[in-house]
Image 1 (cartoon, rainbow, N blue to C red):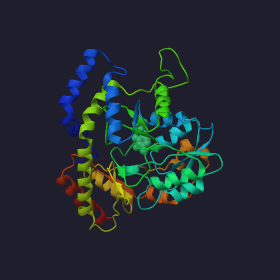
Image 2 (cartoon, helix red, strand yellow):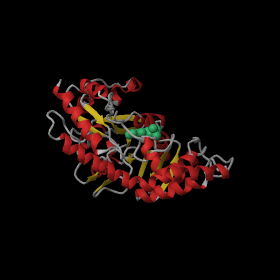
Image 3 (cartoon, protein in one colour):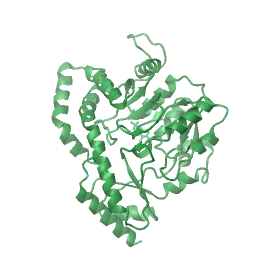
Image 4 (cartoon, rainbow, N blue to C red):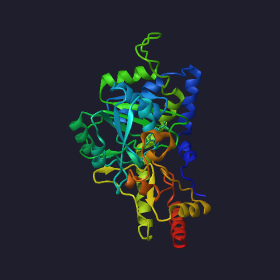
Length: 365
Ligand SMILES: *Cc1c(COP(=O)(O)O)cnc(C)c1O
């Protein structure tokens, strides 16, 4: 059996530190907004090279609160890729905005700036590039488009902690998720907003805590969506290993590249020029994907699909009025993509077994 992720192996590396940290929190009973939260926020901001980090209850809330902090006109359009986890679109709707979907590029399956440009309308106020699978969307092009139309940029960095992009504009406002399976994963729900603006940092912090900075004084309608102190303990311990773990993911991706490049019919993922990829997911494309997936799973290789149904074809977004054919690159990819197991603790032997199994399944189609 080759598991898709190995959270147990990651825990083994941090177990001692986490248990000591939990004990500290339990002794102090600082369960909400304890000192570990502020320390993690500082450490994650420094790691990300962004001045301010505000912890949140989860990544979806973090996106919504980042959008709300910008005080965009109610009902305004927000551009996002149809090829993303549903949470990006969900947060847009919950923030009182209208999702304006765009297609992805065929090479990297990231937001296509050309498609985004043609989706922008008179009432469009924001754009949410998603750093899907662990590499950043083309941020120079996104900022160029945003500058031309006065759009607010909110990055969805849920899958890209530690990624880099040469020559990109600095992060203005971004959200991330620490869902357990993410590159930096908590032991429950957690997320954060990163920003270079002290004003936006304060606005997001107000939102996380009932719109209140001073107890029982509520400046605005907010959330109860703070970063949990026990999760902050886990995240602090894991953050120290994140750069190394991302390096191990890159080594695993290189190894897949070697092992799979000889197999007929398989299209391999690549980092876009200038991108330092952190390989949250290793997404190949194959013919007859559903049969290949079934064959892999039968042989104990826990492959998955990210994501089988694009946002515009989800019943929850029927009101947007889209149908099949509206985002052809996304739709074609949705029928071909297959995520192979990738994580820092995947062994070369396991990868060889994945490659052998994949070659065998494909040869039997
Ligand atoms: C995981 C994820 C989210 C949502 O994060 P949660 O912490 O699960 O709410 C948003 N966008 C993308 C691209 C994600 O992968």
